Length: 203
Image (cartoon, rainbow, N blue to C red):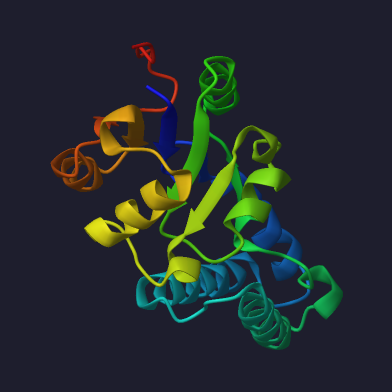
């Protein structure tokens, strides 16, 4: 085994519902109330998910423009200062999954080339750096930047081509069984991964 390709969401990062709730409390205090703030933040999450699903945000500049627009909309509707929203990104409301750092350190200790392949916005690298995981990853493959999303086999093949490794030499970990199934059909050593659950990474 010479390389590892990992999913991000559900493997390395998880939604931080407490951070989202705290932000809703802060924004709701300007008069609109907690429930209205939570509803608006949920709408923002849906807008982000839609951008990921449609691959409509292809660059970091386009992502910056998206979040600027969303921040202005939320601030206006909640009558909150724009300063409380400016600079926020979706990954500020995520947290490292249990065992994520140890997993990455273990892979690097084995001398593996590590890549992350995720259905997400172009700021994949920035998201992992923000949570202290980026330094253990060699290559970053965001669906919106690739123009392809899992489980499309071409997304896996583009990552493998960039890693310059044959499928049998690459371990693939994902929390989505469908992505794992497709990876296996391509010849990767793919496994469904549950954060914090012991598993053998040797071989």
